[in-house]
Length: 362
Ligand code: AN7
Image (cartoon, rainbow, N blue to C red):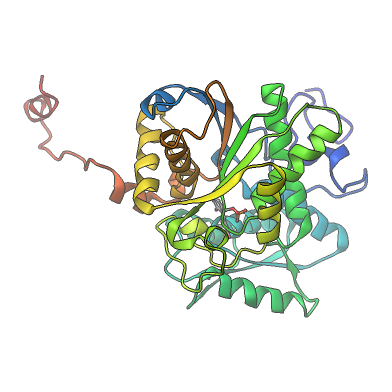
């Protein structure tokens, strides 16, 4: 086996810090902590687009195929790498689930203590399983994400813990690489980029990434950034914090986003929009993308797809546009929701050929 200078097989993907080092705050001496995140596929959807009556090209960036099955790994490889570089011993985050899963995994790999604060009762089962398995101290608070983040901010001020929420600027640096990959994969920038908005770190990061790639001359032009919140958790759209946010898309059940201004800047500077969709529309899109394309995402990802459906109905998208949408997390994160939303339950029958044949209609 041929090895490179860091003793890794020469021909494999070494993770996004290695790939995009020249765009990131790292040096040759930075102790990179990686699970080989990034390099996720961009998948073209045809059946979904015709089902919704669209006249454009749509590609999904399937971030559920990262090591912990969400986009958070992009930011976390950077945040944990920088925490190790500065000698931190304890990392902490508040989370609706995916950040905690990712922090716990990267902290395990870096041999750091990890503490995660979760809103009790409002976290998808797969995410909780991950935090526990990766060995994080897992604290369920009787409150919501915004309250958990408030406590984490206060703990950060003691100087004894390193916060790895997206208020940590290294998280945004890592996450911006998704825009680089999209431009590299398409050979150009898309016309529109759709994504879900919760704490608003990701829309901030994507916009930063697109601008940096354009300034570096890698692509010409920039997409319109189109973010979607759930109707019961839509502080940016409604124009004020929501004290008791609600939505079945628990990943984006956030009432006071940390990167609120970043989201507004992305929307305004890109001539895009941030809008909201109902839980009913989210469920419809969640099922449609699974059964027309074989792509199983978690409910939060269906928010921008529901937004795309609404945009088609409102004639908001010019014919022939090139659209990308980020599917931020894998559907297996939230199996309870999938089973409760699926139109079909398993058909139960006796263990013999006749019974099965009758059920299939043979
Ligand atoms: C699947 O894990 O906030 O707007 O604590 O898990 O950057 O917050 C998760 C957010 C979209 C929203 N899709 O991204 C957390 C957390 C999924 C997510 C978002 C999240 P941001």
